[in-house]
Image 1 (cartoon, protein in one colour):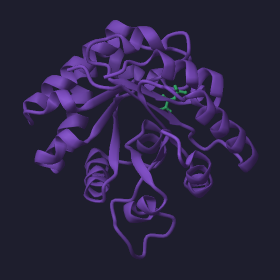
Image 2 (cartoon, helix red, strand yellow; image 1 turned 60 degrees about the vertical axis):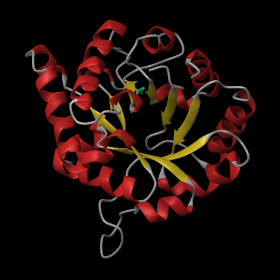
Image 3 (cartoon, helix red, strand yellow; image 1 turned 135 degrees about the horizontal axis):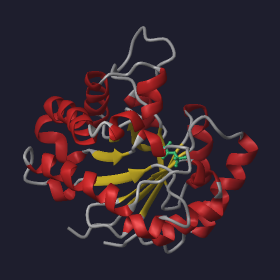
Image 4 (cartoon, protein in one colour; image 1 turned 120 degrees about the vertical axis):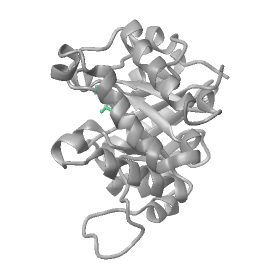
Length: 250
Ligand code: PEP
């Protein structure tokens, strides 16, 4: 299905009031006429600032995580209704850094996706294998297991999510999956989704892992790659705009 691609930047724990101001102004100015949907997933502390800076533009706002709870005694957590108050449209869930450093399990990630959906936020659910898992020939088993948990908990709403295939060995390493390697995994994720919903073609399956201005076009040309989740390169306006320019229109 030919759908408009989605390019989402993941700033991770980077930024400052001053740096964000320059970056978002440059993005807003540079993306006029962009053919794809573009979003920046910013640290929670900067949501209000970026909401204001991007207002009136087509740039969408995203968060990097969301609590599975809606409110209450959960110190440090940020809820989906809170994110909505700042105009957040997307929330990354299950990023490998959260799985790795914060012990997030497949089941927790699935619950977070469910809570986001229930409050009008599209979860960008990350799946991906480590280098050891790839080298052991376990890529398919690992991503299918991660995806199965999401499908199990989200049932018929599954076509409303967005998936990001992010091989852990490619994140922040400068080592990108080849377009063919990525397409292979995207196709199997699509097949798994198709077994759960008649609307699998609608689901955006993004690629993430050292996507940059030079390699984006090749990755984004693949049949089942519907956009990108971009870390490091999303912090440089010129690079992120180049990736946006490489994306497909509907
Ligand atoms: C990410 O953090 O989601 C990511 C893909 O990072 P990078 O592009 O820097 O590899």
